[in-house]
Image 1 (cartoon, one colour):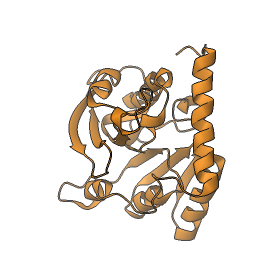
Image 2 (spheres, rainbow, N blue to C red):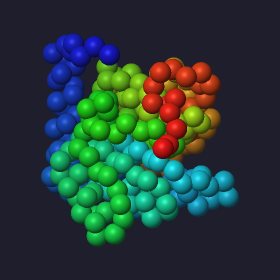
Image 3 (cartoon, rainbow, N blue to C red):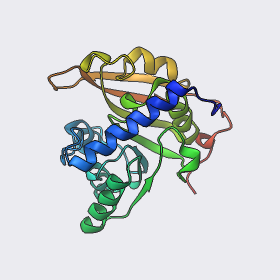
Image 4 (tube, helix red, strand yellow):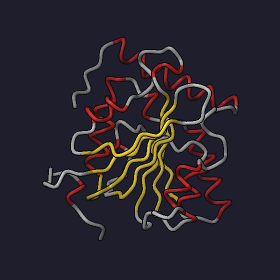
Length: 218
C-alpha cells in the first residue's frame, strides 16, 4: 500500500491518536471495562469452543482479554497504539503470571510491529471501527497476510450511526467488501444503547496468496 497521504488523512490519524491518548490519560476508555465480553468467553468456553492456538489481539488496551486468552491456553500477541495502555497491559500480564507478548504499534502497519504469525484467531474490541477509512485496507491486508488457513476474526464495532460520524463505525457490507478471501459468517447486534455489532469472519481462500497464511506453525 502506498504511504502517500493527504493533509486531511494525516489530520485524521493524528486526531484518532490524540483521542485515544486522552481516554487513557483520563483513565476512562469506554471499551476497556476490565471485563471479558461474553462473546469471547463463548468462543473460548462454549460448546463449540476453539482449540487453543496462536491469537493476535488488535487494540488490546490494558490487557484484560489478552490475559484471559492466555489463561485459556492460547499463545497471545497483543498490540496497542498507546504507550500507556501497553505498559498497563504488560503489568497486568505479569501480575497474572501469564505469558503475553504486548507490543506498541499500529494495527494498520503490522509489518513494523514484529507479529509475523500465522495466527488462528484475531480479536478486535472496537479497534477497527475507529481507524480512518484510508487505513482500513492496510488493516485487512495485514490480517490476511498473517492468517492461518481457516483463521477467525472476532470483531466488535460501533455502527456508523452510533456517534453521527461518517468516518467512524463499521458495517457488515464494508467488511465483506474489504476482507478479500474471508467470509462473514455471523453478525450479532450488541447490547449497547447505541448501534453495535459482533462480527465473525473466517479465512476461506484455499489458494496460497504468498502471505504468512500459507505457512504452518513450526
